[in-house]
Length: 120
Image (cartoon, rainbow, N blue to C red; front, side, top):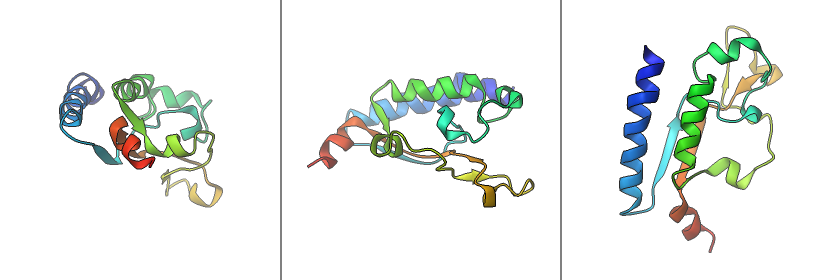
């Protein structure tokens, strides 16, 4: 139920709002977006449980791609396209941080216009 609301309503509404705002000015959307978009954003990408775990489901990852296909850019990936192991979340309970076993869930998403302006 939560994931359906996120994908069908919340993400769609946010994407529409950001697109509308980007028509008026450069946009930067920053925060914990609770999705590990690319395989390189997941330390154990082959784990079977990921397809059912919040933030790593195929539906959530594909929905995030829709935002990037609408004229927005993952700022970190823009400047570091090949980077791996740059995570922003590690399970405390599993003591994963010392071993850098984590997920990249935090993003700086910029409208393409913002990146164009910053390239000077």
